[in-house]
Length: 489
Image (cartoon, rainbow, N blue to C red):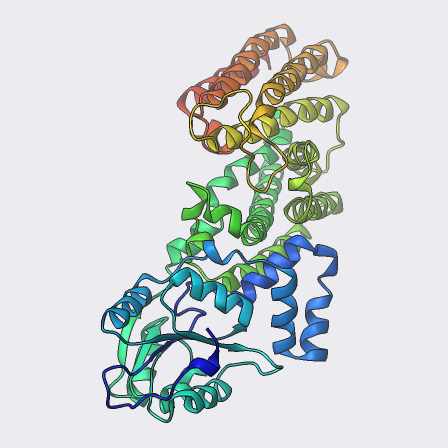
């Protein structure tokens, strides 16, 4: 599939070649961004190389280096159905179809192989970034002026369209359609796509914000219900929501190849191609900075807790999530930091009881989360001895038989800590009837046991904290706990 094999075509014949652009046209993503993200996922400590390659050696060299060291998993990147249909129609008519892209040759050839029936490829090589005028010159040299039809999607494609016989465009919005039609009245708009606000919101994972309700634990356990404390807790909640969404965006961008082969995660906005990956990078930066700006209205300890949370989530996304058991400890810590952040926002001292209780309970919930993901990845009911591994994680199916006991032990450990807490002087200072708090222990045992049973049955399809806030039985259990607290005060 070399350029040398491309023969010059007569524009008047029925076998005029169809030349198809890649980024945004044939695929719903961009190979440069995909490669850069996978490079960062694999070599996070070498992030400095990206600007070094770009500014000292040029864009073409950057693309070559990335193709050598990063695998964007061409087989999983979503194709644009309308463009594929155009290719199949041309092939059925006996017309040769070529792919022309500014991406590195190795990636373009892999994509051509995936599509099938491609006559040849044009790509960035020899230090020449194949975009704009450079692409137009290469195609004219191969097919002659007006000797090919071209499908593109961006302003950089205008020079190529001027040299082509027929202009076909994938328009990302109505404004671009109008510009193309104004410059080329006979142009054909293959499809018009728009990034839907709903998809952008979904990319922020707002349903995961429910976990940030943990910042209100300090408000409730410390019985601080005045207006100032309530406002501080609400502001802390907003900060954690922004920081969490920023972290989720980064995690999703780094996890694209694994998400695209997952039965549920493949429908996420970035994995499905509904939202461009560049949007995610920009949004993640804006949300992270915004969270810190808002945190300055709270005590410095809260800003520190928020910083630790973001550092841990980045470390988790780039490296720790692939390390067996370390990922569980970090996940449990991320739950606990929300609680400590809520206490810090109120300017209250951290208590050792809350520290120990959070350590055990959230470690247990982190194990539940990993067990649920592992169980869901199996083709059928989870079975001991199954060798299938969880994509992007350090676990295999046989680990379930030890993970479940680990999680249950940690969960029951949190109940034990709570029982010890009820014998401490702190309880007598906060509650008039502290003995009534014993009723919370069987409620906790019931809820923790039920979560593990649901996970084992592959019925727990989301984060356990999020699930608890949407599950009627969990909500009823929480209401019972609240009632016990109320009658104990």
